[in-house]
Image (cartoon, rainbow, N blue to C red; front, side, top):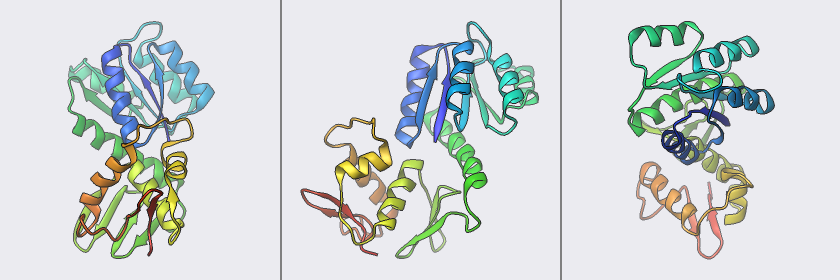
Length: 227
């Protein structure tokens, strides 16, 4: 999924981009409203994060133009303008959410996952995009796994990785294949990126992370799910 981030503050933009990239999104960046509009029409992202106060074209006008072009694309304002009237204006223009700066990373991730679920529900087939790995039920449209009464929140990248292993059960997937399919072909990871991600994911989805059954390590090659 592609996300357009339009924010003129470089530090905030980089922070948002880093969070989104870690969650598994492809990110387009704009430092002004006109660039945001151009990128939107060229790439048609799956959702948009907008600052209000931007050069060239402000965020409210960008939102209005985006809604004229696409009535469905989710739009989120991330703004220092915290007055109620600003939130009302943004929502009345068609935004789906309004996050006030400064914001916490966990809050941002939660809001983004909520929007992603909405996007996925529109695009998934009638079975809801569900699949099962042993006793873990995974619902791609919700970005959640369930084991009995336990609900496990998953990122977009988590779901991509699990879906890939599930679809190739019994096969050993090498690191290059996993990176191309889960991170993207233009991603250049460091040597520990995949191992660190798998380690964090195992702690949430495996009954015993020290004896994993869902994501097995094949030393010197990659990972495998036996099913």
